[in-house]
Amino acid sequence: MKKKIKIVLSLIFIIINFGCSTTKEITKQQELIIYPKPPEVTRIQYLTSFSTSSDIVPQQSEFFESIIGKKEDRTIIKPYGISIYKGKIYICDTMLGGLVVVDLNSSTFEYFIPKGLGELKKPINCFIDKPGKLYIADAERQQIVVFDKSGNYLNAFGLAEQIKPTDVFVEDNKIWVTDLMKHKIAIYNQSDFSLITTFPKDDTDSLSRLFSPTNLFISENEVYVSDFGAFNVKVYDKAGNYKRTVGSYGRNLGQFVRQKGIAVDKENNLYVVDAGFENVQIFNNKGQLLMFFGGSYKGPGDMWLPAKVIIDYDNLNYFQKYVHESFDLKYLIFVTNQYGPSKINIYGFVETK
Image (cartoon, rainbow, N blue to C red; front, top):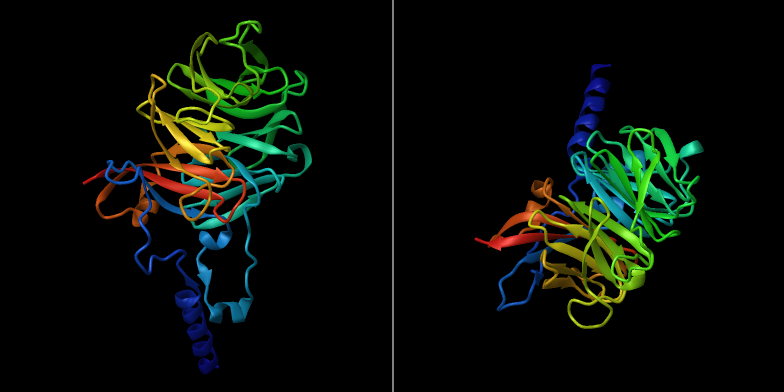
């Protein structure tokens, strides 16, 4: 009997210690991919990417698999929106009919596919507020669907106003929504989800009117709207007053052909994804082009029909191992790719030591 117990304990020890191996171990010197190219000063380094659960979840050893079987890989199919909250990355997958949730702290990769009242049809973008509520812009359902921190359905709104939401942002106890149907930004009360107002008010004003508002971002007192139909990004104050326009149609630097997701960093620099150029352009707060990174896919660091960009200052430690020794990592830039082998690209904004 004692002999059997020793054998069982030995097996448990082997499984615990050798059952899993780390993911994406850096076993050889990786190619250094930087932007802009030398001799200009490096600002951005491509760090890594992930597309499946095997990129995140520790891999099982052959011995472990022989005992419990091989776990099937989960895949990001066609990502668009992305949001990060306390070490968790929420990715809207329009083909999955739900979200992929990657937990960097626990190295897990899970699907969030709610049923019942919270069932999703075409989740485009998402946002997590400070308490942890999840807001999902579902273009096909024509609603913003809201879940609590644990993933339980809370509410859905927008159907009464006949909106077609493509992005959502929560700020100042208000929910800001891009309405592709009415070419407006709709603002809802965060407490009872009632419609407060919409803007722009004047549909005849050539400067302020929106043609196809698809993405938005709020920074301090400014609301940035990616106007896909006008090939530019329009900037308003929070009262809906037009302030300025960034970019125009064309194939020169600083212009757009298929601009989509946008983000703003702490220095008020604007990041704009262009699915036509397959890159991200960065502008200062005066609308002047600073640089771009990415490019049509040929290998790591490139993009393939990119859709969304976000800035992250909180999860640097997880990606520090990919940073070249000559750089200091300041913040992270995530870009979703709807096609290709690298669905989520991660870049680092760096400074030379």
